Image (tube, rainbow, N blue to C red; front, side, top):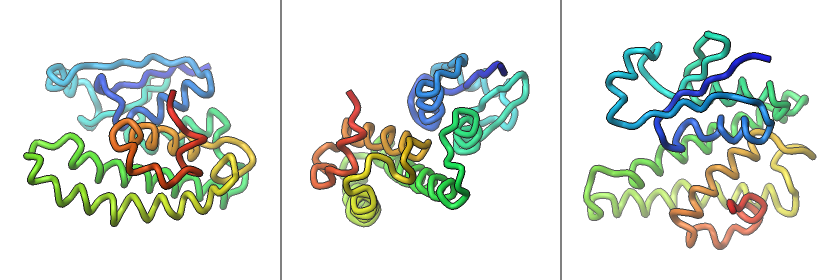
Length: 184
């Protein structure tokens, strides 16, 4: 079995989906985390100077979504049907876009007043339309694309678990989306 090492800050962020895939599949790995103040020195040893990276038997794979796609294939979390696999990819891409927008006001270096408008716009123009489509698509189904769990479902759980912890009131009207994926 290959030796996996995931390298990222001591935070969930862009490495969390990979961690969920590792945890769900039971694939052993080293979770190398470092603190923000260690980053300038750590950066010198990272090809491309960005994290997360996944080292596989000494080879470095950058970019969180590439890492997720790679691990999902190894873990059997990608549908065999190409169209279903593409639907999972599109879902995860969309969730990462939503995360990027959310981080702009969730961890701001600006005052509450400066982020008030972007935060309100995020919920009305980005999150709620996505949640409405996703809620409708899931309906009474257990999984997003197929009759078994995929990495798209793990991404939903990861993102909405985070959202529930930060903005639970925004999710109340979308029970099909959040109920099966609630974090404990």
